[in-house]
Length: 180
Image (cartoon, rainbow, N blue to C red; front, top):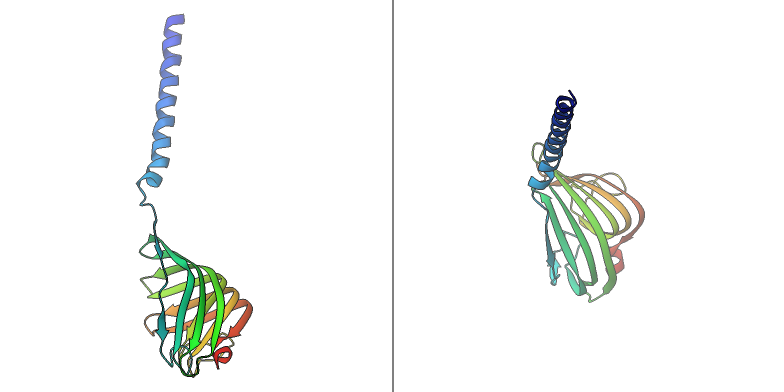
């Protein structure tokens, strides 16, 4: 009797252990099977923002130090971290404005609606073109270029190729005015 009871207890214990192991493997399998995010670090290079796409004049972007990193979680979600000291230059007058751009942005793209939502936190820059929603309400009629210190949420509809919603909190600097 004792031996039979011991085998039954052992069998129950073994079944419980196997069940626990299977449950643990089922729970852990998706995490182990998930593709890890890929991170790419970029060194920024000078470029020009043409007149009308930021300000009424060409703006030269001249980085002096720093990096940008792109972490891709999926084809529809990615994060960008920017840590760049940069000088913006009005190419017509030579006026400059130097800043330390440091921000993190989270990008989520919905392929069904063709809409991208970009949320930033830190010291970021955003250009607006005619037809975009203005950060101050209404629509943009001439290209503008702003520096935001705080948070922003930018909704871009690629069906229209326009910013259709924009909100922010914190401080804003009109870079076109600063470079004029």
